Amino acid sequence: MSEDTGAVAGSGLHLRVPEVRFGDGAVTHLPTVLDEVGVKRPLVVTDPGVDAAGVLAAALAAYDGPSERLDAPTEPSTDDLTPEALPDNVDGVLAVGGGSVLDTAKLAALLLAHGGSPADYLGAGRVPGPVAPTVAVPTTSGTGSQSTQTAVVHYEGVKRGVSDEHLRPDRAVIDPSLTFGLPREVTARSGFDAFVHALESLTARDHRWIPERDITYQGANPVTRPLSQQALSLVHGSLERATMDGDDRAARRALSLGSHLAGVAFSNAGLGAVHALASAVGGMTDAAHGDCLAACVATGLRYNLPVRRDAYAGIAADLGVGSTAEELVGEVMRVRDALGLPDSIGALGLDRGDAGAIVANTLVQERRLVTTPRLPDEDGADLEAAVVRSFD
Ligand SMILES: [Fe+2]
Image (cartoon, rainbow, N blue to C red; front, side, top):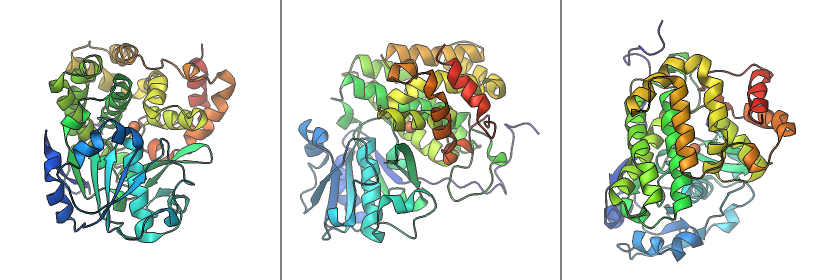
């Protein structure tokens, strides 16, 4: 059976998405959206940077109701949030920020409803019921967290996930105009994240080989592939322009839409080796997610080559950058370098002696590895060889 044919009927595919408002000025609908989900006094989760840049005020310009505020840490850890740290007079969560803010907001909505610590819910399908109503307003174009069911959180030195359908925000309000003033390095890092979301979800293991489990990472499938393709085309066509010329509003809008579609696609299809490696490296270095992806992307794509040669060649042709898998890998590396992102795991300060630990921390990323195109050996020897080679 070919991997890329397959009927939707009877396959049990389930596309899960939050209701979305998209476009310049979308935040003017915020009062209506909060009303729709029954929130009268939201906990506004944001961070001081979003506030200082004037983006928080822009996002909330149309909302004049009561609220409380919680500032999210740059890299949330399981110890950062306790029920005692949360006000008890709120009835929902309004997240205004980048990936860390949105992830912190999901955990806050979880603890408001169920108490405990984020560590109690690590893994997939461990949230006992609905969380507090959540509206997500992303201020970067990257993580797609406004449309996903996962909050990434540091736990004992590894980036782990709390993944559960109850965490997917009820509403997303995506206003590209909030990203018009984003600094170059934030645009580059978060946009590269979206680029890899699109690419890895498009080439994830086919859904028919993925066992049923407690998370909607179903493998690439006929519903998600067109979303991934559209996301990849939009992000590839806009990321460099949006980074190099922050005033290119058309590029900002394309990147905003592309990163959102990539989030919808990967949160239904799953990701692969690049994200698994990057999560491991991120836990060991504290480097930003986009930097870790850039550092790991060549290693992960080359590791997949034996099982994705044809798919990568087709994508190279679709993007107009060549006709072979090697040319796609070359293009990804060219974009990475043009954006000034780290070009190797070594560039993040790790060395060959860390390869064993990187692979051990990769093999625990179960939610990623189930959908990766090439499953690592049980002891990770083949993946370790690929990581060691990356230090040559
Ligand atoms: Fe990511």
